Length: 140
Image (cartoon, rainbow, N blue to C red; front, top):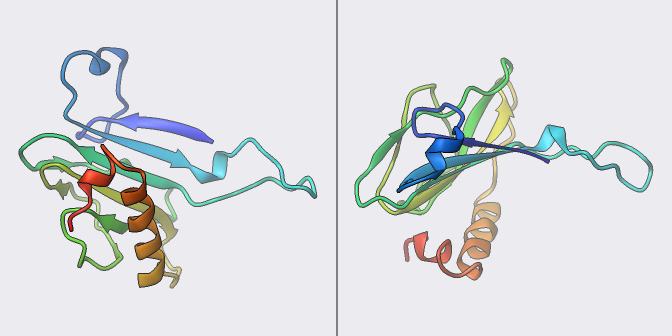
């Protein structure tokens, strides 16, 4: 799987961004670039996910990296507001609250699929089981 790292401005992180105190970053896991095959020899393809982490004590506007032309980002989870439903997002900075994590996936613009409340709870439970530091980001 291809992994890319981003600054809050939505641009790739350079080597010098990893030094000092990085308080906020994003990680994209490209599900369409998995270099493995299933038992039938077919390419494995999964969702492309974006995980945003903010360890800072203040909110940070995070510019989401541009998805492919026919796709848009859908918020799956934001640990600072567990009541948020899955929602498609416009291409403007996402207000990532202090000491929080948000998870997004790409969806086709005209697709009607949405993540269910049960799937969000499974994701939230997995993060809590991970323990610190991820588990501490989930609001109780």
